[in-house]
Image 1 (cartoon, one colour):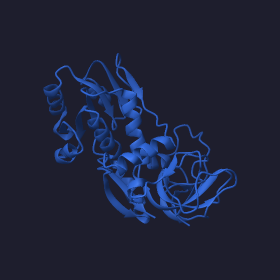
Image 2 (cartoon, helix red, strand yellow):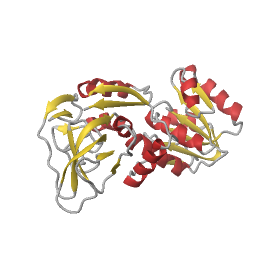
Image 3 (cartoon, helix red, strand yellow):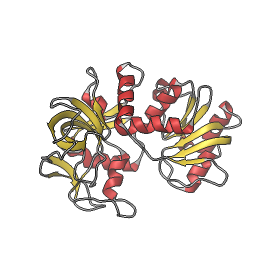
Image 4 (cartoon, helix red, strand yellow):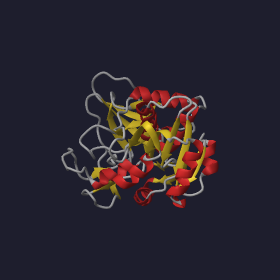
Amino acid sequence: MRAIAVSAFRAEPCLVEVPKPDPEAGEVRVKVEYAALNPLDWQTADGPPDGAVPHVFPLVLGTDFAGRVDMIGSGDNSFRVGDAVFGRVTAPPLGRCGAYAEYVCVPQDSPIALVPRDMPLRIAAALPSSGTTAAQILSSTAVRSGLSLLVVGATGGVGSFLTQLAAARGTGVVAAVRGDESRRMGELGATATVDTTAGAEALEAAVRGLYPDGVDALVDLVSTDAASFAAYASLVRDGGVTVTTRGAPAPPGVAWTDFRLAPNAGLLEELASAVARGELDVPVDMELPLEKAPQALAQNRAGGARGKTVFVI
């Protein structure tokens, strides 16, 4: 089958032919129709920091998928052949299966769920990582109606979902973005949108103009260094909450969370239901053939993502 894989950590991803996987006991095999791009995919290609995660080469990339159940492994099962499903590839070893392939095998008790009848598979594929990350971040920050949230990197998949979910709660969202994205972010529910390329002073003026004492919470989806994170954290009020998804160390005296995703099938079902009811928009920015994945990964690594990119398998 066709797949995007690396032959070693930090090698260039490329289109390869690999054997079609067979489902083990408790697994289902899915014929993938769409896969979604996530920063985790190129981070996986770089390899784990300590190299201790079990893995195999060629290492097939990709986390989020949508398709139809093609085969069911032995044991109890929750799905039937032909079911439209979406989910995340999480089972070890890393690289045995990946979403950037024509087929993927996943445990039935992993983050996998049925796609609602009227939801296109391309939309379902874009939900798992970004949607569940946004929902779980919002829970961890405990931002409630009437409070305020600064989202750094708001135009990407996670940021787009986070802005919508927070605004739906009545939370005031300040979207910090690169470039002029005020119209798009306003449509997603942002109270204000600030172009970070205009300088730190512009962002501080916008935040202080709306919230003189600072915002109640910060979610930084971009910064990897302490200085950048500290600059954004300085805009949070005393007693507020800061969250990083990139492991940036927090300055002294700041309530800080280094977010780690814990996805589950139940949350996937909730998000899919919200999309089906028209309460959550899935911002698919680009749809590309699988062979374009290496270039798309390089572009995503460079930053400035807008919405989600999906690959047609």
